Length: 447
Image (tube, rainbow, N blue to C red; front, side, top):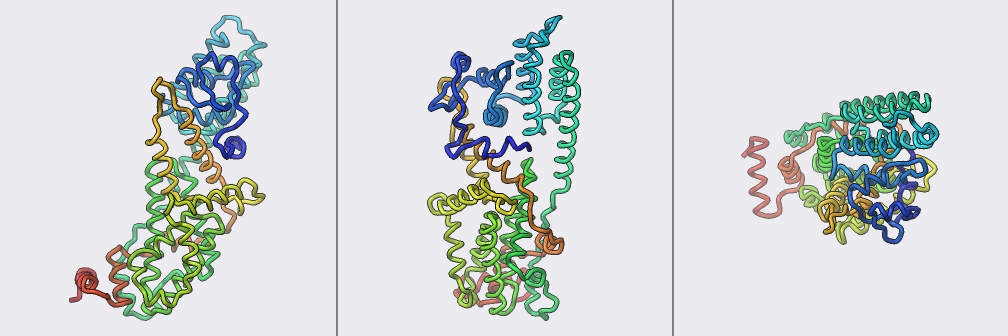
């Protein structure tokens, strides 16, 4: 992604660049502005506003917002076809004798628009029709300047490399291990030497937080299709269950308390890094019923730090505390001088939920038939931030052993967690006793 897509250059805290002003053409074209911001227009007017001329080029924020939202109304190949057709018409590119002076002013601008489109939404150009429209446009202006041929070849070469990289990235997405084992409960009756738990792989909370950030950024940067989004949700769930498993597995209360305190420190380091997704997964794992019921274990834990972290991720007020912390991390990222300070990994499920409800909760069109561009400005703001955050390269050195453990260590199912919890601290009421007896029978084969 090019630097032009960073939220610093595209968006202001209020949502959109304040530099967009109405021109005479805009008013005639049916674009509606409010306080200098484009709020609505017909689809035709928005398409026209996208098209450069000899003395006009659309703002980068507008290009991104419109290309992002336009697919709800028109297929990318049809949009590009209409853009090219209007360019041909307006610049008279079908004339037997071309106005070379005019086209030399127009050429760099249409090339820039096509370049930004291919860099921002490269998947649109997997269709042959898209490449066909692109080549046709270049062929029409190339006779006026041979340099356009070279620029077209560079554009296509860069596009092919980007598509190849993205395709390779999809194939290389780390497969979230589905390894599940309730039989781990049997470890409790065996010597500790055969157990392999997180503390034997990594005993430093800061290091584990860094490795979790590695995993998050890898997943975060590869969200291209729905299947990958599902894989990311699976990773979140896996981390929740891994934390709960690590806490419930040790036979001794002191060891369980030690693991809890370790994960509290890991969660705190994740918060400091800006890795809110791992933070939420760890807190969720520690709040699962099989873990929270371990009262004797928790009595040995210094819980002050945990309550502070829990407060930060409290869902009250639509996650007000978390959103405040996220804004702080986002501001730090904007002013950062190092990748370490640029890291912002939001609570991913809430991010997707916000985007979903913004899309579903606001009409795409207004009663007069205009496109509700105000809605798409807000969508573009959120997606623009997402794009900026996911471009950050992880500054921490990768530890293959820890990464491998995070992805492959066996985890309990919910039943396995409850059984391990009951084996650790006896059931407190008849309901728990009945469930313990049932789980011992089904999982351990004991009566």
